[in-house]
Image (cartoon, rainbow, N blue to C red; front, side, top):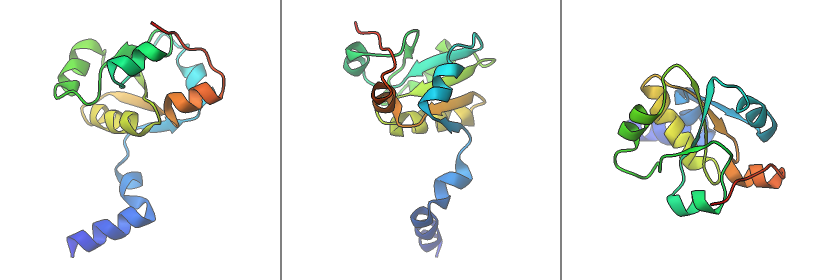
Length: 126
């Protein structure tokens, strides 16, 4: 019975909506947010993706690493908002959920770096 309920909630899109503990925002809002000194920008992609182009000032912590949460705890201040992005917004939504669960205030870039590029926003390459 529990599996049926979870399935129905997922199909209706209510499963994530009920458990989401962070905000998803569009590119324009994200760009305004990251200019605030009380915001830390977090890129949760892999190193090679980050090197191809990232948002200026972003800290890289690969969301797929086993110690992602431990790295985040050691590098990210709890008193600041964490503005998170990845390629398309899926990994960063997952990361935002994990960090919000342990007390961080998180904001996810809806559409990720793909939406950022589409909006012709600036990137830094290394």
